[in-house]
Image 1: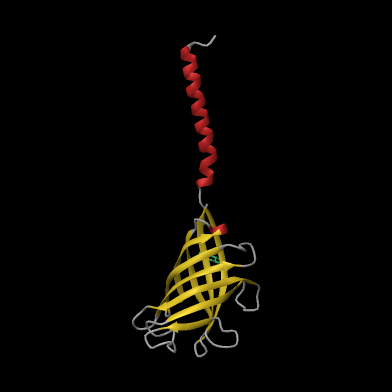
Image 2: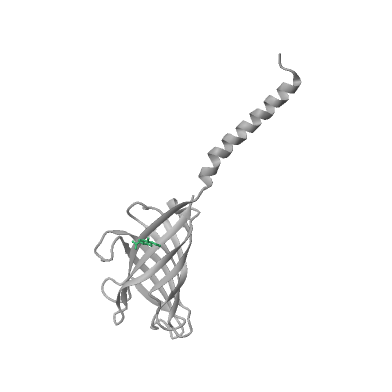
Length: 180
Ligand SMILES: *[C@@H]1O[C@H](CO)[C@@H](O)[C@H](O)[C@H]1NC(C)=O
């Protein structure tokens, strides 16, 4: 027959066990996963397949993306490989704002909207500076949706093709994010 003392210690043992089980199941879920992905963004300010346009700026809508104050809107195809003909997995939609007085630096803020592949239906929100003279530019991943909910991370951007006269280029983005 259980004495009151035994009942009390049994009760605490029970609570202790429940707590341990709860912690054991909860903590692994709180641990962050890391995902690395690389993709290519094709930006064309000219041509039949134009994907980018300057829309405002200090010198009016005809201003060049390399002038301080110019705002450009982009809807660039995102592909798995460096060729524009490789598999399209999404769009990069958003803004570039020339925000360096000498015209050599852009501020970028755009969404990568995945329409195909492993991350179809998910998005990444990219924000950072894009300095013309730098081979590799690091930027921030500020958030995301779908697979990328609660995401935080960084990416490195590299220009792999550039036609300055025609203002057409291909960027490689290599992104590392942490999420649950
Ligand atoms: C992306 O960068 C990581 C290092 O940060 C590197 O290990 C990986 O090979 C890169 N991926 C591509 C496709 O360049």
